[in-house]
Length: 314
Image (cartoon, rainbow, N blue to C red; front, top):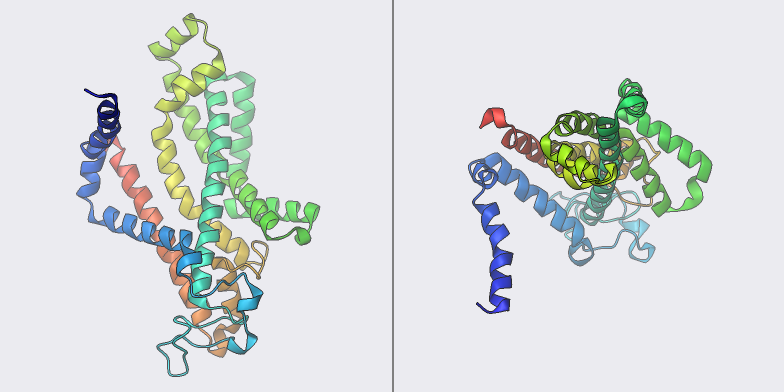
């Protein structure tokens, strides 16, 4: 068999195994999971392709006109067909703002979850494998943090960071502060879960064999133990993605997250809340619906993945 043919066959083999796996079979049998995945992919595609499909760039002041502010949706009597979902108080097209806002929310969510996973998985591996006073200190810190709601931890970290760097650091810096705040708020679940799984894995024969041949602790933890504890981590990450998106929206709604010049979903809801009782309901309702649909679809995927990976339900 030619080399190119063998390479192509090897490339198709993992995909074939994935499609024939029990997880894929369960997914095909779950209409809710399929619908949730389609909605999530649709919103993700809209966010990624926002510069191509959005009628307006809400970040470009040259495209904004205050004379176009607070225009109702196109289906209302005073609406303008140019603005499908209406405009906000700055004259931004709400449909475009939602696309770009979803982009910001998804970036913050993915980055925050990735940071939380990095911190939590590393500390969980160390606490479970090394044990002793190191593991005790890590778990006591985790226990103390669990006594406070995650949103309060995020508010505290975000407030301290903004007090140190100030709000004049720019949008990118403020988004980075939110990512760090979310990451430091949600690492505990990963650490506790990975520690429990590591305690079980560290007693197995393959770990003892790795110790006998002289592998270092870090090599054993990250090359041999980590692949066997990733199942629960993926479930937690999927569920925490929705929580991270909601946390970003909450911080922005409270005015301590993304600045009002950047149309994140939380910022748009915050702006619309000021005009809600004066009749401009669309500025709050449409971003709120987008946020709810995004969080619900990701949560449904997380619930399905948790059930699909639970051996007791097979």
